Image (cartoon, rainbow, N blue to C red; front, side):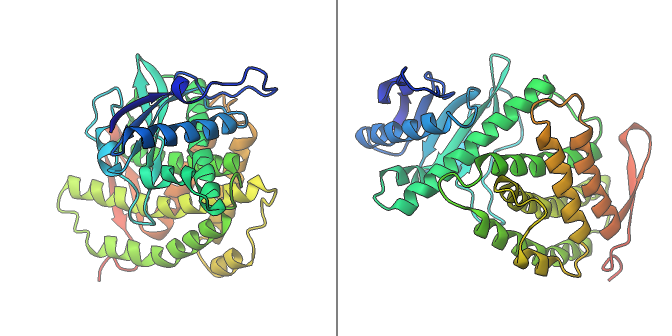
Length: 342
């Protein structure tokens, strides 16, 4: 089956509920690669979960929900409401992505659309409690992204999907601070709904930290700077590598904060950070994200977000290259990484 199931068809909201849900009753489920009866059953159960989570997380800006066995195709073909050369793809370098909440434009209004791999969505029919906990937490995390995006758009209307970056360097800068902030806030909002993701985030962060120096070294060894395009790609890759490291740190830090453990990362993380160049940056980004969260949805300027980007750039300059900015968005770099001349 390739079609839609309207929320009204699966279960109505009970008007007697003391805490009304923010789940939009007009939400459609786009179901791909399954029989109609199965699709309706999955949509029915998912709608119930979304309604319950919508009592704790504001998902009033939800555009729709797509469930697909061919998840990669669903991502690539999602109608985002505008023309873009960027094709949505799942995470594959650190784990494998099974859910995503990209922004879309509908009649000029920014909304969020949630996509799930059908394997995960199908857990709603499982008799295994751990499967149910997993899908519940996955839904909560993606719902948190809906709330985060709406809050940012309310404070800074017209930016997301509708504004261009002043310079390419700032595009790298903003991509990284957006990813770090979004995952910190999403994990802090979703917390341990369903199950506690902290052990998994801890393991992933430590793994990425152990690999980061070798990964950047390989980027440096492969860089020759023969053309501006090659330089741009190299700089973007280095920003991306360090940004990915801090993004996975933010997954962990947001979850820590959700259970009241800010500043207390635990023995495994402290051991991994002992003697590491990352240690001071780790606690600085925790403070920056925490400060942003304390004024969630009431931001009068972007200084707090830019501070995260500045921290990433500080790491790039400290560890790999000096960036010299010129006029008109032009820039030059001097690579001082230990592998620059090997």
